[in-house]
Image 1 (cartoon, rainbow, N blue to C red):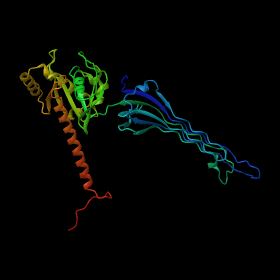
Image 2: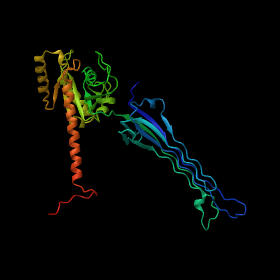
Image 3: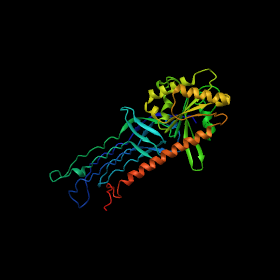
Image 4: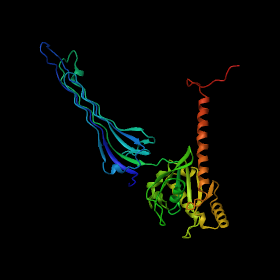
Length: 362
């Protein structure tokens, strides 16, 4: 299936039904009075996150969504039927933006989460609401209000724990094949990966994390060069970045310059990404002799002034990949434990009724 991570749609909520002008006319009941009912409300439009979807391709075929109009009011004080709401399913991780104002309306990050994107119109009032002691036979009513209509931009940002960074042919797809059950395409030419993919890395029975493989970046990616900014968004949600580098490129390029180029693109796209935990992964170590491998790795690390964790692996030979995954799992375990400790600390300073805790009296 073709991967689509951006789409535009137009949503139109239903208009409210009109109020009714009617008078009660029954035998033996003179001066029956006004009995026009109210119009029904218009249907609203909701977006709902569905983990069964992983692409926005359906919105290439249907771009306009209209909810049902409310029914007009009727005599005998009968209210019009409300229009049915419309629910549109989208993938988990979809960000919804109002095109005209550039306002982010919502971010659907969990299965079943719902977001109201177009409110249905209110029903109009029937003439029974306008009767008074001086207006026994009102002939006025109000029309239903119009439902919201707006154009929305949908962006899919993958939900993953780990994001892979690197130039084309750095070995990112080979790495994700080596550590997970995902099978991205691998070939000996650049830009083999044309769309992002997810893989689950399971290090134990109940310990795992999700890794995202995004297409290779080049200089100018944040400005749209290559596959560009379209896929930089997919690393925005990750907690840990693995910067994969070919430590022995056959074209003679400098790995240090490649790392600097990617860092510049991250800073241009979102400076906060540079502050995120990022580990250096020197790949294709099997192309060098064992003694030369460590010397070369140390040269790259020293030239970068790298103070964060770094690893030498061979994704193709699956050397060092297991240790890297174990270290990543320990990283996430430590984060979750820290979050639990913070939650317990917050609970400890509050009494069950929510009031601040006090020191016990001696």
